[in-house]
Image 1 (cartoon, rainbow, N blue to C red):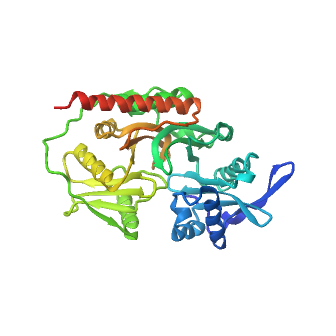
Image 2: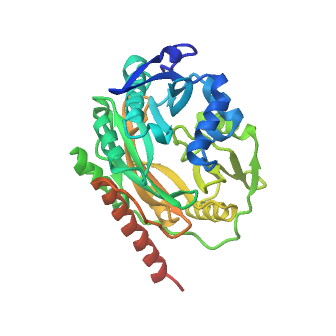
Image 3: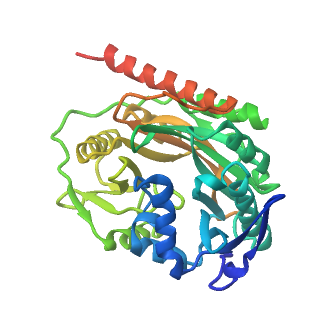
Length: 400
């Protein structure tokens, strides 16, 4: 698979015309920029920014030297005035753009949008190292920025309610840019539960996709048993052991592009192992892989969720293939509610791409104050909330 390469990613070092009276330098970040990058994010976010690429010096250094990262800076008169990061998964030809920041005095001139546009063209056309790029966008940003991303080709594919908490709980939206022709590679006619189809129906109508095959799946929890007792391990070895087990095909739920686990939960006999991406400073968690010899996966997922909540996780995410309604139903019964639909997310060995359903288990009541929603983001949020309340009502009806 193509990647950015050790040196080619430094090709971007050019003038960016921002407005009639403003021109900045757009260039790739270097290791000697680390202190200035940290100061830039502290200036804008006041020390509340959560991503490890910015907050963890070792992770920042890694990103600045990793050939699959493209970290772009805006520079003006020797000072940094903007920053945005891209990272690529070459195995799935998928990219992510994130951590965009602009100093207040340089806002309002589309500098960030123009920087993102340059990064997209570089990755998808010049280097040909990814076919789609996704972004997770705060719903607190201006409607103008949402429109700018739409003009770049980003489409709304879902919503992440209460995904992070800094000062307030934040709901984010999922947006995806597809290189022309990529959606034609997706496997048609996903096989979905009725709950997953509610989310798919929104993007199906938006993109004029085909109808899904909807299957009613019945899942029952087996006899009550003792709680799973997890041991928690947090070390650098966790990530590399995860990659080894994932690449050997030993894990379910292991497609979670451009996320990596910091934590491993395991029973004493290692009969059940869960890999977890978790950011303690904002409560965000994601299951990046799981293996178990238990015969009741619903129970295992429920026990995992309960343990994650006890750790301080407030939002737990799970990605499921859009052709496996059995997994989708198990996840729903374990309170993982469909909230986004990601067409053509995973690259298969035959060159086709497989859709995925994104589900979340939120451990606090949804908070929807002060949101700025596009037409489709509103539809996703309304569909999620109906599913969320229906699931609560099912619990109430089934109460003993």
